[in-house]
Length: 104
Image (cartoon, rainbow, N blue to C red; front, side, top):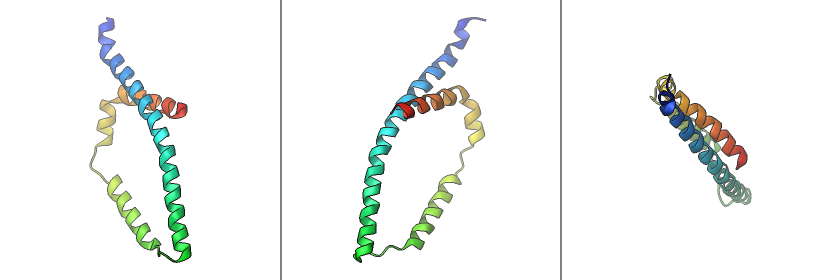
């Protein structure tokens, strides 16, 4: 068996791993910044609610969140078909993403 038959597989593994590492590293950095802003935003909302400047309708927030999640995860993408056709890329991407997220 010639090594040329493994070139497409090696390309997928290498590209998936590098792309996963970069995305994992970047997403961890961005998530840290995003969480600070989300925390400050919710602290400001709770303070304004406590002082009486605004009133928060928690029932509406809960209903909207449930509807959003139901629409998001009820989509029409055939996950088994997608995964089976991209196993080498997805596997190396997940490993790279984990390494990048841990490093970041």
